[in-house]
Length: 135
Picture (cartoon, rainbow, N blue to C red):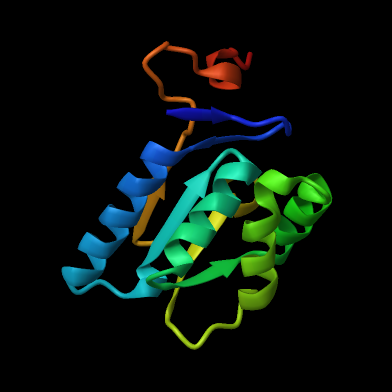
């Protein structure tokens, strides 16, 4: 279920669907929107996640993530819909917001509930850069 895009980022529709259902479940358990953060290592997955989540809950994106996504996906038709949604929604929304962020730009922050979409989980066992040892 890994969507290989022409851009340098990766997305995974199956993981996005699981994250959406999990966020909805957690909210039904009485947690607040601002208790939840959804993290992913890929800007592409972050943009697709925010667009999917935005259909049912408010979404908050960090300005750094939004600027990096605008730069990386400028002119990329695979992400035009997501960039439009992010521009329209930004960080201000009438709905309570769930935070969606890249792992790199979320470092040092906290949340009660952290959901992680690693994207590269797939039937081929190919995990990309996550396979690299940092010594």
